[in-house]
Length: 155
Image 1: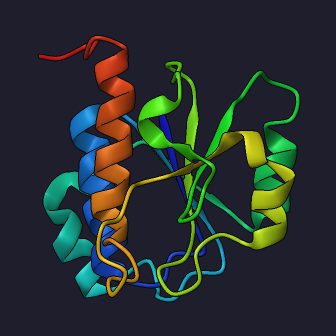
Image 2 (image 1 turned 180 degrees about the vertical axis):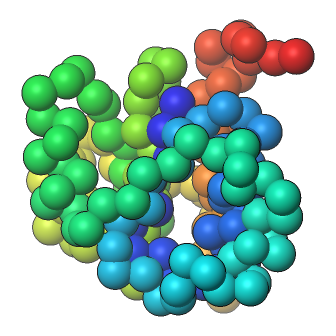
């Protein structure tokens, strides 16, 4: 599996996602610009000593990332509020990419509209709550994808 963070802004969220990726052997893709420096202490603290166990790649922007994956059979799933489909309705494959946007702005609307068939949402039940934490969202969707695959590779 792959988790893609598009322009992440909050170091502890990215660190937590890195730790999640290390524990699940999921590749992490970080797409610039970032709202922090990669040597940020909070980023390292949240990721603890797991960074050495994370397979990750850094991308200059969304276009560079997308271009690099056009030739392969990559399937991108865009997780963002108001998506037409629940994340539990998707049928995930082992090499899928789970794409999450910035903490304050989410994913760009044109990107979502262009990929409406792969736009997923996590249900919310309180209209006064704007969103869930990015690292929590990544964990929810990733573990659903892994569950669908029978937790293959569990130690």
